[in-house]
Image (cartoon, rainbow, N blue to C red; front, side):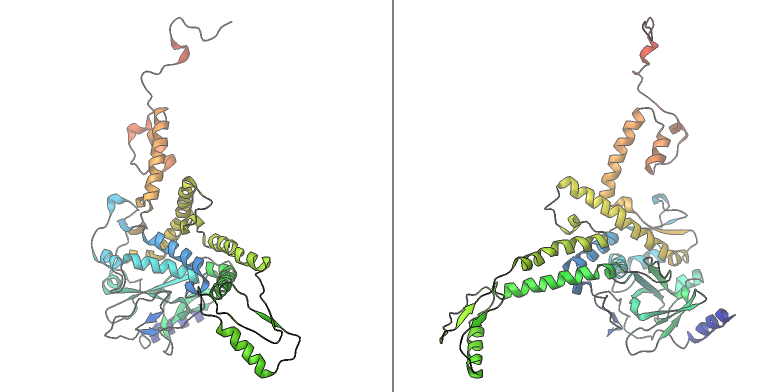
Length: 426
């Protein structure tokens, strides 16, 4: 009863709290530049992977580009190249979801948000910028003019008895919250064991290693900027006045000409002695730990180091295997997750429509398929029916009745079948 009252309340106020219609096109938000209607949105510590170091940014970029390069197709009834939908309003929307986004940018941003925040929100808008419900069928499909990817931190979910009944969305900082129904929001998330309605970001797990790596990089930069010096210590047996101390400090500071330039000579009197501390083994080990931080970050994001260009410990065969494992174990699962998330959007244009990523069209998967076909050919020459081979290796060939029969070379014959030959000897 309470749930129905709240849902009715959300529906009643959605007409009063709508995304403001402006002449300018709403900006397509990204995890790196949070803008909506040319204004900054609520910021978060997880919206900029660059601040967590080079390895985090590289991992997010490789994963996002890996998914975006897989062709997204629409077919009827099942993922099949023979029933492709090659034209229509849906295809036009997917090719240009937003005036500022093409198909590649659209999927790249979805994956980027999943990696940095564990969640991705997509809202379908009409001509004047109002959200469109995805449950009204073809009438909703005709209203959709663009798709926006909204920052996850601008959303608050409304729950009753463990069920989602709506969302509160703040388009930009300082504006009033907008009430949205669940069917007006496409919500894609990575699983979180403590809350099935929330998403869990890999960046949260890798944050400690990433911050340690950034601190190591800053320490290395400070040493290089100071020409390898860790500072100077001035020793004397005499008491120095404040003026003498200031003169010594000024003389030491003025000797530095900048990174890569030789230091000026300095002359000290009155029994002063300068001690130059050297970099200790602990400092060197501290810098060496950047390699282990990189390995931890790559392990959390599921990106082999070979994908980032580190091949010192790998040959060509190992690198190709790593790329195949990366695509099968990281890229393909994300593709399947996005397919499920976009299903409500695809089906409103037609219940028979199915959106899917053609992972077999990627060159690395085509090479793998050629290897499987060579194996299938060897099995077929051994007499295994082709339909069994096709089903076992999932080659994608159609079913034919005559492929239920196994064939072998006519020159083959049983060993003991020749006339006059005994199959056994005493």
